[in-house]
Length: 386
Image (tube, rainbow, N blue to C red; front, side, top):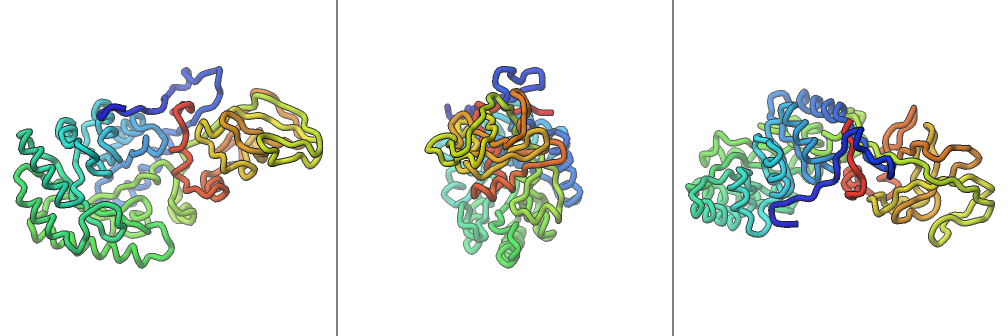
């Protein structure tokens, strides 16, 4: 990858899905739009930053970016400069904040593509001022304050140092000041409340320093749902836009519509006799004579090996267990005495008929969080927008 290029998974229309390898992710525009609308209604007085980092959480950066633009998103949030450049090259004109900050010598790219830089320290701010002055440009900058997550950001206790320096930087236009909640989804609200209070104090300090017309923002998806006083000038939903929560209890509190379904089909059927083993190391043996189906998906596609003998799939609207070790390109399913046909659809996650395999179910089985699995899908799995 070059400094300003980004390799994205294949995105297909319904007519383009390969008839030769039937595995693909089916992504619902309507579900994403519905979730977007829910967050808009949750905080009608706040702007909305659509967070589309990591290929829009595995849902397709450019398709989701264009969808959110059409829906009226005020801002975009990305992880790295390459993602911001990809959005600009796709024609998006909304403000774009690179949340991950500056990696290496990239400031010239931010200036070229009119991206908001994150100044997370005095050192970063000084570098931005030097580069912008040399280029004869004004850099759009957002100041990142660390209120307790201890990842990146100027510590809230010394925020005044960064604020004063930014005010004195003639080639820096501060467009926003923000922080990030570390525990917004947890039932124990005490630390999140502490962070909200800390950021509130920094906000007052910033206003007294002269930053009265900048955008203050703090709330991610869970923060916007759980804490009305964290919504401020703008909310930053990410995971929630795609129909998932960082904690399972939030679904009953703030229902969202899952937008991502992973599907394949049966490519092989075999009768396995009682006590015979299946897959590498024969980790599973048949308790009786059964039918076993082979599905052409494996960890080479991003379906985790850790789900071996732990997950279910849907075939004909019914649950069946994955048996044996998940291979690089295939896994096997115990059909018991049921008869199915080669070519039948298999749903790895998502709904089929009245049944559903949720990402939360798979995450609890494999020790993941729900936004990991769509992101793990490799370039071998095309995304189909419907």
